[in-house]
Image (cartoon, rainbow, N blue to C red):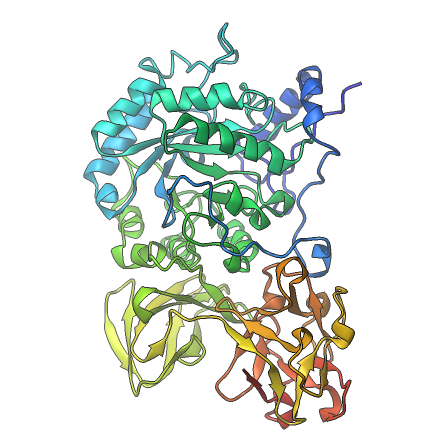
Length: 578
């Protein structure tokens, strides 16, 4: 008897949209469509269930302790060998603005607008078709068919036009028996569909996750990776499984980017939630393989100009794909000005390929830093709150040293200034100020490995008995140079111990943010309770808590416990690495 189809997840848009991993809201037309499809398809799905095991649960918010079974992150694994997306992809997708109302004329007019309005010159390459482009049935040979009413020249004719402008065409399919809107899916048809895409001149595939029969995500997405590769045509491969199945831990072996969350909505609250889900995953991104927090909502819905600038700033700081999702031919001058800011785009497209990481976050005031090629650092000061606030950091905190003065370039105004070290700005409610910081040394950064010495005790941070058990509280112990005392502080702010499949991260246990929280080892999950800032004064602070790594009771004895404590300058809070 066939297994039931997985039910779509709650959504927040009033217009049709895909399942979300964000908090539940009233269901949308997209959910109604997907529910109808899931009821109609169980018989079709039955033969495909042999591909997988149990139906996956819906994605849940990530916490350190919910990640116990999660494997350690892949170390900059090569993307699918297609040589694409060496910097995050830039382009347009029709879904956010048009939903199912896609057509050849829409894609051509959008491509023409991008060609003439400065977007193409700014780096936008891809014009991407989303769901609803095809007929509800394959042809007699099992091939997908473009809806002739919507695409009278077919996908090939549309691609030819887009290519004639020097742009590239993207298309949409689904790693299930049907797309989210109920059109034929590619599960079990990967080879045929990939051949169709290649023969049509498609340059980009967005691959969704509806009606997936419960088969393992990695198996389904890898099948299409291999089918695309077999065509011999370079096709950028964008995985869209909504951040489920810890995709960031295996996505680099399969695709050029992977969605880390559910669908975005054109509201500040949706953008903020997605930002928080994506920002901690910096260690998984790099040239050819990127975390994707979903398409831009710049110019859409209730997003103000300030909020749109924040989204664009934060996506660039996080080295995210920049996929515009608004009505491009009718975009306002303000929207186009945001989408084509060359200074901010340069941060996103920086060839070093580092995703920015959180340096500090307190009371809704966030500081992010992104190392850039050549030694500069991009700093984003983001005000989540509803009131204007001053946000301050320092050159040292972002990894810059060795200069009496640093040059700050405001990436929105273009104004330049100098500072001896303090980096500060008055930031409006929901706003972001971005600086490019030049001068001194550092910035590009590198991982530092060695013993983490507790200065006050003359001992080293130690994993007791060389334990690999998640949740083991760290201690101080006489230094001996063993693997359980060898820590690597990465440019993304993690302290890791051990290597390979045994790798663990230094973790504020249970996402604790209060004094006395134990500091333990836990499988690396990219969250802010596993990010630490090593300051020039010798203190180590947790990015999530703002508290200091401390030896409990200022003890100097072997076995004294490591914990979080209010920073007070005591020698029990002084550490050196190396």
